[in-house]
Image (cartoon, rainbow, N blue to C red; front, side, top):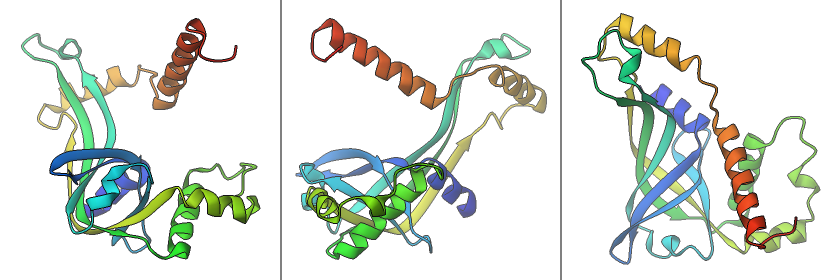
Length: 202
């Protein structure tokens, strides 16, 4: 339902935004933030990203990927099964409006920081030099998507028996594999590769 869809959006705010650019499909991966009355999504492009240049008036699609994982048929009570994938996703459609008001852009970026910074973080956006922030803001193009339609899908083994769903849940509960751990491992791997190639300081 719509309430669950907005929960997915709030919990998985790093979205993929699709539009047409110069007649071809174009996608940008970026954080999007739903506003208080759930009428629009706020975000910003890097100025060098060409997607914003012809996006006005288009019907765009933002895809929010919730949790997802592989489901092995070896977890079932029978060998008459095939592998599958469980997932939750939400599609948001709407038209883009570029932000011309500097305060609206600043407010949307502040709200984004407040959402993701830890409550005990030493970083406070209000402490940053306003001139420095103003300079950085010149390198982005703020926008909002006026929401026209939301679609969601959850594939959670609901087409299987309760027994089989329980078997799957028991197996998943044994897997310690968070996105944060994956990103940390990828960062370490990238640093090691660059060091081997002499592309970064030790």
